[in-house]
Image (tube, one colour):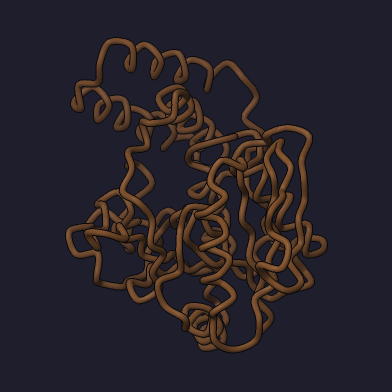
Length: 293
């Protein structure tokens, strides 16, 4: 099984990027082919770091899903030149040298497996944040399981998934793009696994560090529902998330930004609407995460 890897960068973490590439180069088995996508920046200083390294320099920052989509296409239409693609944050580090081989094995053993979500752990404490375990029962990050979504900067996707359901929603720019792809993949019959033994070391961070966090999260939540859910579930899903947001008692500026994004999600185009089948709703429910939360 031929593996590729897509890494997007803003050019502001050169040392971390080199360390990540070194960890990819150390993977056992056949070499992993890598493309680094510069988001509105030149990709420099990587000469000789990894044999066969490809680079793409975009004239502007297309956002996380847009940049990753460019990386996918660098491997041919829908990533067709390889069998699966790893997506890795540029400040992450593959802890083990057998992660690529574990990916090959997982995809080979289960032809219905479309996406593998890695475990993210802090390099100093070893802690895995609760939000990095892609299921509701997240208290034990060391338990692997079948899940309904995945982590954007630490995963592997079979390229057949992209060829069947399309890429990430570029218009999202940031937030919830993984769930959009996950729902479309599940609706097409693919499976998603969370694997605790596939580890990306990544410093513990808060998602709210991004200035656009509250607006993007709210807007994209609405877009996600409008694009993917059967009509009766759209108000239920968004009502639950409105209630959860209020219960978390965000600051007044954060709440203002959130409601601004929520309104924007209703008043702006969200892309094509392809509501999932009711049997997919039931699959999500049986996996422990019905699409109302």
